[in-house]
Amino acid sequence: MQDIEAVCDMTEPEVLVPVRCPICMRESLAGFRISVIADALESGEIRLYADCHVVSWDAGQRELERIREYLDAMWTANPQEVRREMCDLDSASDEADREIILEGDLELPEVEIAH
Image 1 (cartoon, rainbow, N blue to C red):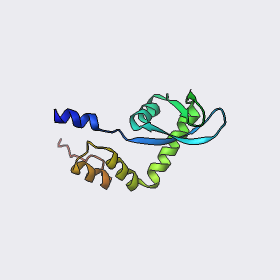
Image 2 (spheres, rainbow, N blue to C red; image 1 turned 90 degrees about the vertical axis):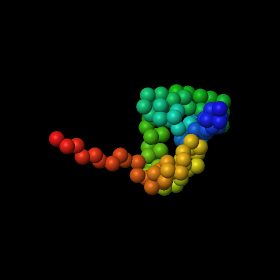
Image 3 (spheres, rainbow, N blue to C red; image 1 turned 90 degrees about the horizontal axis):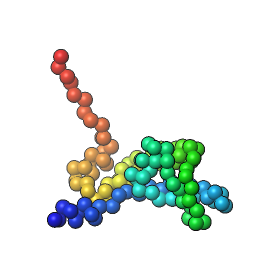
Image 4 (cartoon, helix red, strand yellow; image 1 turned 45 degrees about the vertical axis):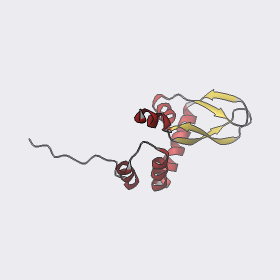
């Protein structure tokens, strides 16, 4: 029962992405769960929202590309800080997971195959 409660208490990390209101053209950052952004970048579809007006719209290709560029720039500019934030937001990670993430060593070791 305790395991089920732990799963229910987990919070999925949220990322901020740039949006531009189609009514007033004001730029702002909108928060989305990281899984929503991942799905959007894979599928090419996401519903965006502006906080200055009660409006939502389907992102176009240029908006999706802008989100990708923004995240690439943000995550490559300070990867150590991003990894630390992800550890803090991931309540399911244990100390071993945190060490791997913070070190940035996320690649699998090469395995030699005998012929």
